[in-house]
Length: 581
Image (cartoon, rainbow, N blue to C red; front, side, top):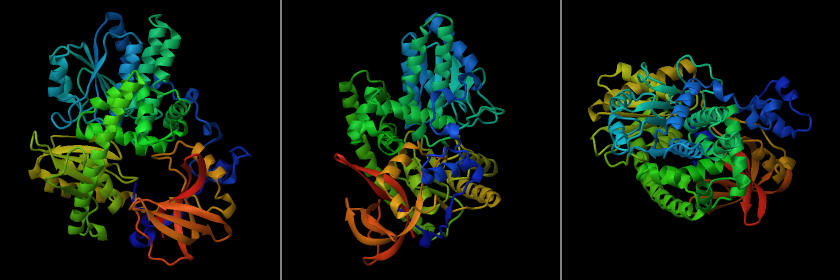
């Protein structure tokens, strides 16, 4: 949960989205007028109002998927062992769980997974991971959410007699791994219609193509091929939301289908257990639940210990095992929150030291602290990005290697992985490894190179922002009338999602009369406000917000989401405040 923004302090311009009248006119006549303008502003067509699995971009059109599916079919026919090489974030965990689930259902010989220990091995298929994988004697390594830049790791795997099948969505470097089959929507020259597909989405496409081919050959029944993959749509939804990839229409289909299954109770025991420990109601599952309650608990395993715990939870066959593992993940998440709070406080002190809170910093923020935990720096970078409105990288030292590991988070419109790559070409020194995508990336470098990289990265970010034009605007969907601030509209807006990255949840902008305010939970502000045109008193909550220095019955401008507040057996409309002007 973020601090609400203060428009008068950071010079944020509050602007209203608009859409061509032709887009609005093409939507059904019976739509609520507010919903009509929200969807039209996001260029949603009538055909996209109810995303269905049948509308997915065809499985066979993903670059490399046909050849990769044929190789998996051969592995199934020969009884070869497939070892899935995962990643330590939610996207990688869900992709690994999906792959193992489908391979088991398809009758593969003892498929298994291996997740690198982020503190010992770092990210991806490294030579050391290839050597560790070889001890399990697989014939075929299948990477998920990694591998596209693993040149040395693929080479070492082949030296050890293993073939490699790479499934990834991250951007490739100038050279592709030699001798590997590759499935990636972002390969150079790709014209695939959804480059925003994340790691678990790529794995879903590959296993769907594999199941289809196995059924065509009569190796497995057609209904098994279909059900094994569609039963994993809960995993696809979770990984897609957690990885913050843009929710283009293809991704919205995948997320919507996964959420439908969760709400209907057709989800795996591990996800049901995670909803339970998070105190969320599975029957009301929304993308916000996945992003803010379920994903952090899975990520806590990868950040503090070993994502194997998370994948085991997602693969659990019974409720008792799932509950035990989910409880462990919940404990880890509590530890993560405490460590994150401490590190973010230290980061804010560092920001004060360089004047960042006053806007007197370079175009990007790069901070390092000797005591920071390498598994939490991504969360610190996200906090720095929110505080400054600039791309941010937080660095920690890897105790095993002595190198610095940085995690980057970007702002809308700036491709942080490309900015990082450009910076590395002009700095002195060299990075050991880097990679990522538009909104998030990682890098490993020597401490002696940090100052050079910091300067080069800030210069490149500044150059990109000068070219693109800086826009710190907060975009809203306009005002709501007093009679529109009702539960029925809040429920309509919630149902019109899934909302997320690149498909923002509706924000509205009104001046209200502030009638009451009080602090709840020690750090959140609960207000009661009234629309100037009358109507009932409305509950409004601003997370991580101190009381306003305002008397009662004074005007206050709020940018807010019209949300559904579920408390015990009641459901009411409430305002969730994103900006106070």
